[in-house]
Length: 281
Image (cartoon, rainbow, N blue to C red; front, side, top):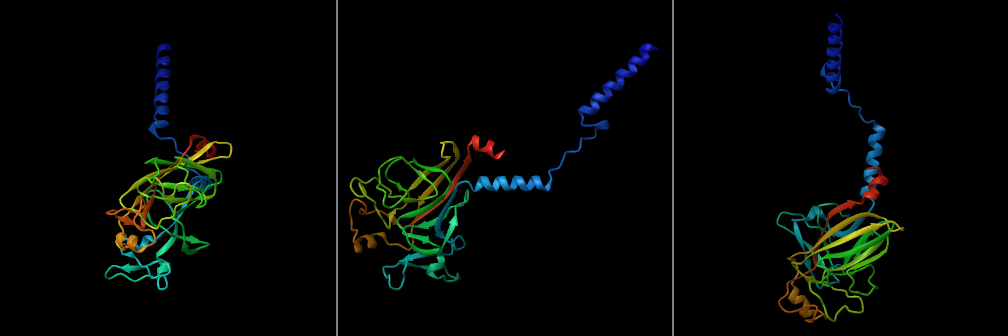
């Protein structure tokens, strides 16, 4: 009799153990606690803060106009104050010159088309120097040429800064980065002083890395930007060089395809493990 009672207790124990392993009595799963609205909102706020930690802004052709026309070069400054005008494709609407370019934030995986020499100042489209990239970051910004790591692309934080030939430059943010994707290494021009160029060699590709650090040197975020010099349908590079005061030189050689247009894309955006811990991720 005692053995029978013991056997019954063993069977009850085994059934209970199996039931618990399955998530509850009779195999019923334990209800999963849903996150509250406050918790979801807090998570959203943290993710937004992380995404806004390091931001990039450029003056670009309005994405809504991509594929609907092109920017035609013009020497007639009196008529076309930005040295160009929008030529719409057949069936597309015409657009005023000052409405073609807009200030845009770079978003991951979304290339934007920028033009050398044009940028926004206090919200108004105006002349710029080379390509201006505004970097929004509260801390130390370090920019490195990744590929190619040479002077076929020139980087400086301000136009008054000399092209120093360094692979990496750094400065306290927020700041502006002056970019000139020359397309070839120069021996004389731009050495020892700033170089301004309204056109560069087409068909070149560059990768630039931007890192954001706390003032104590703690790495927070790393981003990579891809810059490609694009074909320029509305620009006759040879005619431009022959008629301009630049002329053929080390900067502009015979037979080169020149362009005023570049695409810039944020191809990667990664947080350091330290920042993830700080953000509770």
